[in-house]
Length: 145
Image (cartoon, rainbow, N blue to C red; front, top):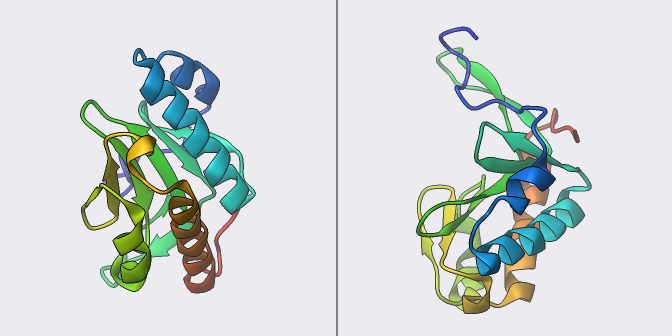
């Protein structure tokens, strides 16, 4: 791996084995439900990115500095305190959806949920679908795995 490549790369590790190993049954079920949602939104299968991220689709990017790489279009990770969903375009265009989502926190491109029961699943599905469409519109080289 070159110095400019991402440390987190797509791997051949088993997504099923990763999800099966989640100790908390509620978190495991939530992750399986998010997997189905993201597979439907992207039309791409789940792929492990590094040891703890489940990603869907991929796109190439290039910064003005010349650094370029490859990343997932969307994904999730069952972190210790939250289920983290990666909404790559961020949330600025989704104020109305976010207001209806339910209990959550956000970072730049991260949506943090304690559990799916805290949010409106239809709104979450729409958020994921719209974010995937936004990525496809801005990234002509978006590809399915």
